[in-house]
Length: 296
Image (cartoon, rainbow, N blue to C red; front, side):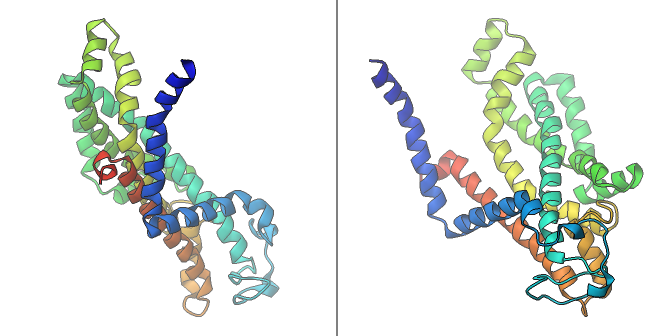
């Protein structure tokens, strides 16, 4: 009896898993994006072990080898200090991706609870939260991030704070819309009827049921956040030398372009491939989590 009940309860999960793999496999671009992103993540995680010149990650100079073009020893060439660009690009993946994850995570921690509280509570609390949200949304995210980093001071940590501050309103608006719909559901009304505190309803019923659209939005935002981080570093407001960050490397390399073309090209390609992978994967996740798409 117990085994049959367990089998019946697992059927929907198995069916959803099969549909997920089907939707993932039917799109070649999503497969390529997934494998490419996994490769980038693995290279970033293993960078301290696999880079050929770990001593070039810091500001150690080898002037005798400066501006060497791509070759077997230096696949991406060297920079103005003779450092291996390949090693620094791999370490740059750790910096860019980890920074983007932290920035998006911080934006979620701020935006999701505020959106759930605003949508569930309504009234004056909803008005206050949404008017503050509208103020932040009235500025372009990159412009707001530049202004905040200029006030806080140029550093990678301040860039994370600035990006999170410019991104959280999008999650607040998204979750608020979901919360307004969810609070009319019977399970939420039943919880209110038995006297469940409002904060428990928000964190136990509303927020868990908004996870799907939030995951989709966050996965698609990762590419934009990586671009914003690179833009801030390019302007001298993000990572500071000798940190091997892609935007900073492009900023320094543009002074030597086009003679030393490899200095800017390879970090630029790393940004392009990573952002493209996140965007394509985000589209696939949206298709997988969208019930209308799953039924097609």
